[in-house]
Image 1 (cartoon, rainbow, N blue to C red):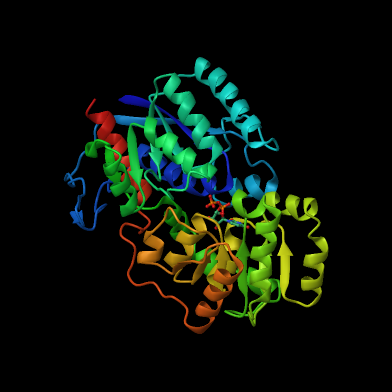
Image 2: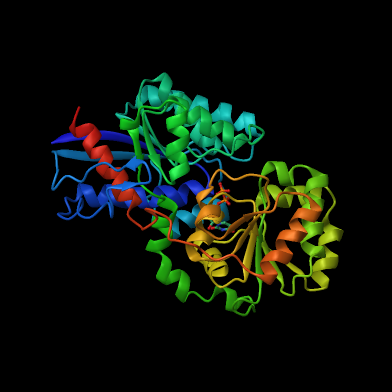
Length: 404
Ligand code: UDP
């Protein structure tokens, strides 16, 4: 039996949601489930991407031994702890505890921690998800130790270098060895960047694996009712991109556009810690309290995964600048207005329910009026967003190490 040592890195809320199904798939594979490799690809090719041919049954003598590293980028109960419990993620083997610091201090602390951890522990491969600071710090550190790097959600590009997440994606992809791709644009971007296609694997979206795994609980949940809401009679808002909430003028402009639009439903806003801090810093409390008194907007703490998706599932539509929420709403066929000028997830516009509203007052009002009149519906199911993406990732890891 060949034992492969993997380091799995997670640090922020969306990371926990993406790493959970990968851990489940690794454990399923390790327990030698017979049907692990059956029916993983529903078609041989998609557009001009030839999918890796299915082998009948390929099961080299490989076992994965994984170490889960939590950088501590998100650290409080409602941004981290609750996700471990709800998604049944094992306790991290190590937690660097770097949270609550400014961007660059956080990254430099992560680098120090990775250096000392990797000096003591060697890995065959470091597997990273998404585009947060933890992804960046882990990829740079792993490359210094010559560990192989696999990036899940590789190739996504907003082409906006003003976004810290875009820099994290570009740097991580420039030093990764294996690329696990969630949507067709990711594949095309990496080909344009000159990557070797034999290392590109179109696997689908692991965030949708988590969603499908929990869908019954999400549908059967009653969170929206418990807070006094009626099905399709409310709107959900999330905002946390630095370009939107760290800039006082922009933050106010977005909120004013939303609140001045004649939305005939209450707006439910689970507020990210970064945005909450800025509400106080910019003195927006009065702005909110007026609107709260008039029943237009309700602020909540960040929600646990199941409650949040229950809220989304039964909402009228969603306003957000999140990456993952564009995907979840598209998959669930709930209209989504994205409060950004660009998206690194164009498949949500092409196939899904996503509309880009931009970040200025008039654009946002126009998008809201449009969705109130005729909400966008999903045009087609999104290829390989089917709950099997993590299994495909593990299959490709097995083949990669089996061939070496
Ligand atoms: N989410 C959650 N509770 C909330 C808001 C979001 O569980 O109060 C989930 C959401 O369903 C999605 C993920 O967090 O799975 C998205 O994270 P976020 O918007 O913070 O990050 P991004 O995707 O923009 O990187």
